[in-house]
Length: 512
Image (cartoon, rainbow, N blue to C red; front, side, top):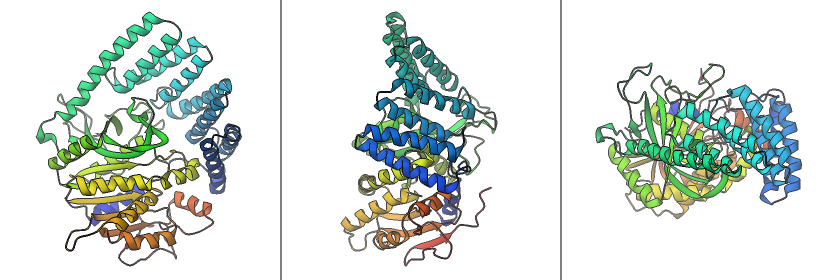
């Protein structure tokens, strides 16, 4: 069905007015403290890029000091800053200090997320590798065993996350010279990987009646998850493009990291629980005593399947034939990981009851409230790759209608990509425009620059809509970091009103 104005209002409600993770927790230091932290962390990123290990270490220590003031002692963003400090310490050859920093980060995550949360496994793996480097084999094996126990409890044995942890334990035993144990673990990992592959393949071998655009499997069951031999959750397939580098991990939530890479593409499968509430991104919560990620209760990234361009287009066309011949491209904003971008794209698909195909474009955001300036640098270099991705979708997918939704800082890459397309596109007389609707929610773009680019972009789309609000904390931070220059997504007396662009002020929309 066509994307209608009422559903777009809901998109904005879901995206632009959701609290930015970590922003609300920055109460001790306030917005000014967060701005100072963002500047220091940006300088840290620049030092790392130019290979200045000594400067990076000084700045990483300073960022942690500021983070303790801004966030307080028990906050996940402080844990992320400690993990960055560990990176700097490790690069400087200070392995013992890196282990201590990661130990602090682990303690924070355990207190906030619980001792059995799956997010802990990546940190446990890092600590295990540092333990191996320090010849502390008993600690390395113990850490890997704990990671395996968490993944087994959460995902079961025949899941790629668990297989990856099993292989990590095998490597720890190999480092310790325990060849017999390592061999047995490797054989078990190979067998479990084959079972995991069968489970993934089953999604691609579903009957045609189970296909509804991006919705791969609706499943059967009631709101309590009672089922008759079927999944107690829906599975949404989202195609993606990204210029994030792969991490080397097989775990879906860790498959792509925060480093920049070449344009990569593929699809992901994401679970939506049957009791899902519109607008919510269900996640494990210590407040609800619901600490373990579970597709029955949470929106979970189940699989990541990277593809080459030819195979990507073949699968995309197949998906389009299964539902409406319509594409929705979502570009996320600042402070978003690949994992959370994929989960959000799937949630939007489900909440909108969109029977076309959803595509995510994920640029290499650092996924931290403190990484604003680093994210600015990353989004700036992403526009040309996004332009290539959008051009491929427009020219080669065969979709009848293509919509683009961008949020927050993601609008920068989106608008520059669209401007590049507009400057190179030669529209034949009477031909439809490349895009149907371009929806720019809470754009973190300089207002003057936005006005200049919109003059070109309007020639590409049937309709361009700007959604603004005066309640967006990320835009308030941006405004401070940019010397008070107004952002296009801010409303109030200076709200942007432009020719051929619909402007909607959403400041009074409630989010409860």
